[in-house]
Each structure stands twice: as structure tokens, then as C-alpha cells.
Length: 137
Length: 137
DNA sequence: GTTCTTGCAAAATATTTGCAAGACG
DNA sequence: CGTCTTGCAAATATTTTGCAAGAAC
Image (cartoon, rainbow over all chains, first blue to last red; front, side, top):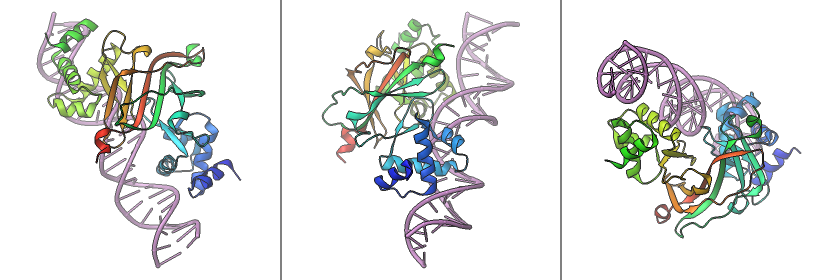
């Protein structure tokens, strides 16, 4: 069984062909990806269906979303059980030149205190700057 | 002299009436604000002019931008000389219920290491969850 | 046959630009 | 004048929804 299908099954989302394709594409890109890029990778699936699949994935904790200021949210497949938990989220880097977003999977986000009445559910740590490739141009 | 005008002058941006009004509104809101909200506060200024003012402010380090996943970037007046530096940026909290963004001005963003070839310029630390007001509803 | 899923089209939301008129110096 | 700034309209970009047809069970 494909990895994508297995994940859907395990998370309780019905593994329709479209959903498998979308999730599979997201696994293969290996970097946070926005809807437009997924659309151009997949081609056979309408963007509204991709959109709906992603929202479903978000809801079921299969992917998480990132805002990097590029204008459209990017999505990344959750790794492991605790992926989306605050303790386990990693740092991202957004290149302001090429608009790519990189993961630093081994760099966990340092925890900070929040006032008692606030209830955190997730956290984004986004560093912006210039990536190695754009630097050497 | 108004605070807004003084800031513009000091940062080297010509203090036109519009710019003073926009910056003044941003100072008065005391929370990160998006273009739509500014538009509804100001009313007399076209959104494209607000947009252009904000972009100018960004460029000259008068404000910084935040992405909280609400779909539109928010802007916040820089405080002090080192405001936008990585060392001095503070943590934000986005309420997924009311879509407001709060500042925790005294909570500085903990620094993390990035691979040597990456050149950081700024950093966003965004916690998402439920704010006190929405919690008690 | 009832519910779920999908594609298409269109609405809704936001940003960004072109351009001419007016302000400024 | 010549440059800068502004408002209006329109172009882009992107997300989101309505709906009917078809698939799944």
C-alpha cells in the first residue's frame, strides 16, 4: 500500500483516489507547498478539489499549514504522532528572493511563556532572509 | 508635532498628510492591523494609498509585517531602534476564533541556530490558539 | 436511494498596477 | 516645468462556495 493511502486510512480519512494523489504529491515535494504549486504538479485534479483535500487534511492533523508572507499558505505533511504539537514543531526559513520555504526539521521551536488566559494550539516560527542558492547569485 | 509626523521625518520619509494619517491610525490601534481594518478606520483615504504608504513604511523600517494566517498581512509600528532586528522581535498570538492578533511585547523571540549558508533578516514567532475573550464565550 | 466526492463556474476576498489629475517645490 | 502623490478603476492573484453530475456504499 502506498504511504499516502496508509496515512489517510490511519487518520480516519476516506482514501479517495484524489486525496491519495494530493497527499502523495505533498510527500514527494519534500518542502512546504502551496496550492498553486500542487495544481501545477498534479494537473489532473481541479484546484477546488485540491483545496478541499488540504482542508480535510488540516482538520484531521495530516498536514499543517504555514504562512510565510508569500501570499498563499503552504502545506507540509505531519511527521510522527506529535508533529503538530507545539513541543514538536520545527523552524522554517523563507527566502525573500526565490520565495521558497525550507524546513529545519531538527531545529525545534523554543517554547515561550504566554499569559495564563491564552490557550495555545499551534505555533509557527518563520525566519526570513536569503537562502544559500540565492546568496550565491 | 504629532508622533507620526516625527517618526516619518526621522526615518527619512516625506510626511505627507496621508502618510501621517495612516501611521497615526496604526499607532492608535495598538495592535497589528491589516489594510481592510485601516481602510475602515480611516475612510477618507483610498486603499491603494494606504497600501502604498504601508509598503513605504516597510521599506524604511517604520513598520513591520506579520502573517498570522488570517489571509491578509498585518502591520505593526516598530518600537525603538532595534525593533525589527531578530534579537528584538517579540512573540505574537493569533486567535483562531476572532482572528485578532495580540502582541506579547515583553516576550522576546528565543534565538535558534540556522545552517551557516542561510542569511536571516527577520523572524516571526506566531502562536495560534484561543484568546481570553473568546475562551469565555 | 442516500450520502459523499468531484469538476466547473462563479463569487468573494485581497493585493497590486496604470494612469491622469492635482499638489508641491 | 518636473517630480511626487493620490484616487479611481481595473488587473491579478487566491481562496472559497454553489451546484449538478457521478461515484460509492
